[in-house]
Image (cartoon, rainbow, N blue to C red; front, side, top):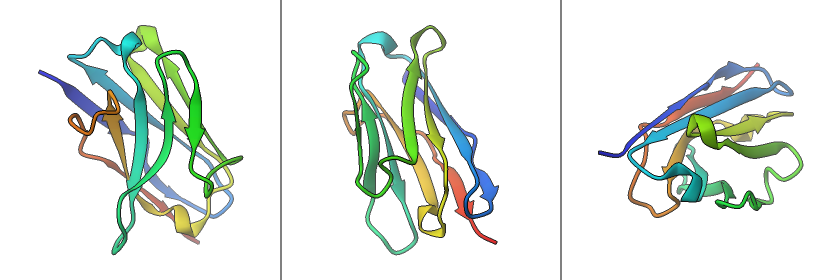
Length: 114
């Protein structure tokens, strides 16, 4: 049974920071790529960041320089550090365990507002 749990979302002011966490079980984590997606109201889901099993990372242009994806294999956890947050970052953030499109968490809401 694959379980994926996102956490760390919340309400933050523009310019603030949040760190999202995604814990996954039921997969061989150290061999698995991981990714973060987000979906804002009325918009399609978009890839935010991904990290390979070897630690290589990719970012959407909209978040490059502001967000950092990382992983802690002993904890079976991937993180998304979000700095300099903007209102347009408001979305539900989802973790794709394995980067296969099969295993998702329920998402965590990030709201950036004054």
